[in-house]
Amino acid sequence: MIVLIPAYEPDLRLVHLVRDLRSALPHARVLVMDDGSGPGYDGVFQVAADAGAHVERAATNRGKGVTLKRGFAWAAEHAPGETVVCADCDGQHTPSDIAAVASLVRPGTRSMVLGERSFTAASGPPVPLRSRLGNTVTRWLFRAVTGTRVNDTQTGLRAYPADVLGWLQSVPGDRFEYEFTLLLRARGAGVEIHQTSIQTIYLDANESSHFRPVVDSLRIYAPLLRFAASSLAGYALDVVALLLLSRLGAPLVAAILGARVVSAAANFAINRDLVFGHAGPATRAAGRYVVLAAALLGANACLMTLLVTGWGVSLLVAKVVVEALLFTVSYAAQQRLVFTGPASASLPVRVDA
Image (cartoon, rainbow, N blue to C red; front, side, top):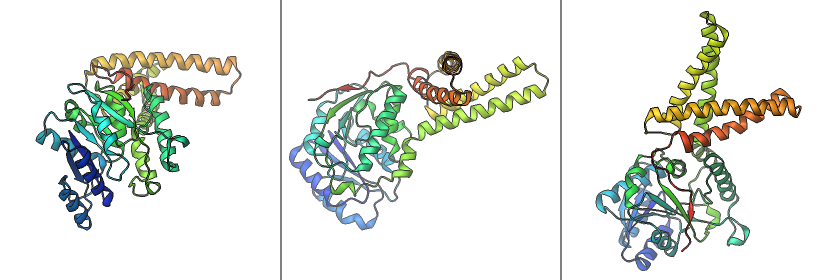
């Protein structure tokens, strides 16, 4: 087993973790990946190495996602076939929890195991407000767009069998958004998600965290933001194509249908390549996309009719409500049904030891 610890400007808690791991899990290899902390932290990394860790340094700060992928590449090259467990360097994860998560990995499968923290008041020490709010938002957002429940989307304690190390290195993301993107893309890649409870530990109100609330939150929500931008671009293209075809003398119905075909084709291409990163057969995804588009168009018409004609809602309000609802439905359907691989993962499974 490899315990992979990404570290940026760590303090002595990294050293304590390495020592505890070497004592509690003597057969595990501890791999510390420095994310460009600089020469001011040479002493901490040297003591960690003296405590039994293998330390890989980086000259510049690239982000947690890049650092984790560097670690996965190292493990694949130097310890092929070994389970990799990722843990934070700030003392939030205990050796017993690291061992428990690792024990649930099933070699030979495409899966991951998440160490799930509890964010309730009765779970132990007070949870910092930004951590509680951030996890709540991403948890419900993830469930809304994927239809699956992951109780702790931001946990840094994750275990992977060797079979997914190649996939882990292929998923985009340089910083904190990387781990959330892994969850979003797991189903399409046929990677199962399992969860088990761990201790909830926050030291000094999590002040050592390098998470930037605004910038890194935007990175985490980037897939949805790209999807929204793609939808707006499709709408703009639809309008431009409609005006152009009308100017060229096309009948109104033909201009409307032609513009919709052009905008839908562009939207499909953008979503496939930039939003969902789908690498499967384009023809199969395109067929599903057409069926979904037709279903959404029918649902839009039915809901608009119900709200405006049946309930007396104003046309503008009805339009906003229906578009907001179908935006979420469209993202979830495309993520789960259109841009998915030939093998689909099961829903997240709770596997408490």
